[in-house]
Image 1 (cartoon, rainbow, N blue to C red):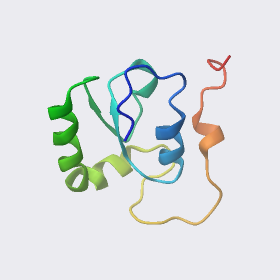
Image 2: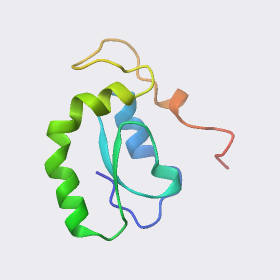
Image 3: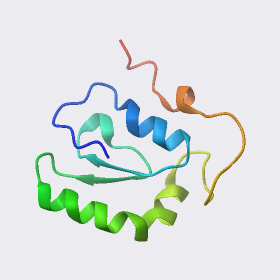
Image 4: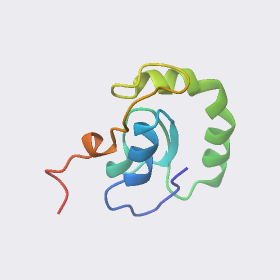
Length: 90
């Protein structure tokens, strides 16, 4: 869960995605990633609703993750460095 109003690079949800874990994030440009449920920043009711929906939508969200279209643990190295758009990092 990343309920930020401001976020630099969105590393927490990218790291979660590398481990095949969907996230609930604020709807900010840096957090608009596959495998996330997005909520308006500062909207506590939407955040609570997304957290309640997350278990039911987990399989669909995991299938959206790049290179992680599976359910359950997957052996092998993490891909967090691959998921970061290093061209935009400064």
